[in-house]
Amino acid sequence: MAQELGQLPMGWLLTALIVIVVASGFSIGRIRAERYLIAGGQKFHSRGNYHGYYVAMWGFIPPLLVAGLYVLFAKPTALGLLSSELPEAFHTLSSAELQSYLESVANAAAMGGYSGSDLVFATVTGRYLELWGSLKGATLALMLAGAVTGIMYARRKVSPAFRARLRVERGAEAFLFLCAAIAIATTVGIVASLLYESLRFFAEVPFTDFLFGTRWNAQTSAEFGALPLFFGTFMIALIAMLVAAPVGLFSAIYLSEYASVRTRRYVKPLLEMLAGIPTVVYGFFALLVIAPAVRASALGINSFLIELGAANGPVLAAQPTSALAAGLVMGVMVIPFVSSLSDDVINAVPDSLRDGAFAMGATKSETIKQIILPAALPGIVASMLLAVSRAIGETMIVVMAAGQRARISFDPSTDLTTITVQIVALLTGETEFDSPKTLSAFALGLVLFVVTLIFNLIALRVVQRYRDKYE
Image (cartoon, rainbow, N blue to C red):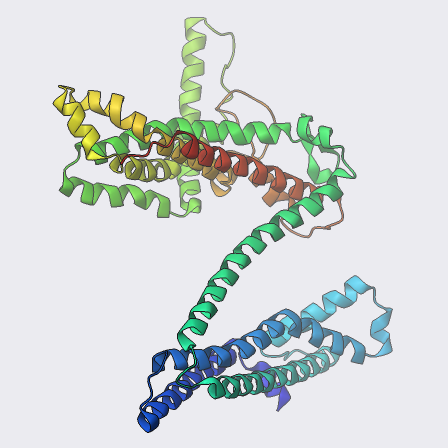
């Protein structure tokens, strides 16, 4: 029985139990409140629905806590119990080998069991399913007991003078605060994990060598100078912004000031669709269309300069993959970030400023240049900085179109690499999390996090510093 229960999907069981408990608690609380009304005709402080919500809330909280404990500790507990029951022969394995074996057992159990020819593995998997099923049964029983206890406790509170509405509102406020706290705790956890692993890396590699070194060869744990990665990241982001900034800004000006309502209705959604295209599609487009075009153009420029006698040899590298190809496509990708945000900011400028400029005899273009754009400048700058942050964090386009060679070169037709590409390369495949090679990925991630944070703080500061308030 326990083994069959171990094969059942726990998520559906938990969801069904919580739904039944909440519905039952609401019905019990509401019915009890309505009985008071019918019997005594007393005036209630809160409506019957709030009493139902209060009882349902107390029926929901205990099962939710038990479910959270199950998610966090069920698998480690089952593996620990299984490990204690294994024969002595298994304990001759190293801790890493034993952990790998237990993970294989857990994966086989997650697939419904093991049906191969290894009888020992099949027996161990079956025992794991039994332990897992016992934990599931104990969890469901504990959830049900907690729900019944919570409902009975809350049901006794139902009375005409009980302020159920205030309790429910406080519960909703506490739930919203918990959601906000989870978001903040997640951010703190990410930063703490990056910082911890980065400090381990800097204990082996000097901080100055990492930031200012010009040679990167982390795959062999030989050289960790990340300056070429920083150069490639910012160069590709710069090319992207040279495309996205003017196109996005001019698109926003056209949509907000020149386009008709009908044109805006169709053009704005089409422009924003660029943000919904998967980045791997942009990567294929850059690799198959833009990169060959950039290489052909570079070869043509080399031939032209040589024929003119302005150069004795090739000036541009004309590589099959290049920073220019990745930057151009990335610029197209981040156009919606600039255009959509800038359009919203320009539309937020009060019409009274436009009317005043027209009354003074200014033309439409003069009004845009001298009145609207200065008023919307904080939001426009913020949209640019947010687009830069998005471009710096892009991975797939750079992997497919820019190459993976770490070097410093001002030739846009050559292949470069970025921080995100190297993080993917360092953490792909079998890795040892104690080696400098792997730890360097966390150091790169920390640098990338700090850079994007700085750009976002600058954007917020610009908005707060130069925002004009119109009455």
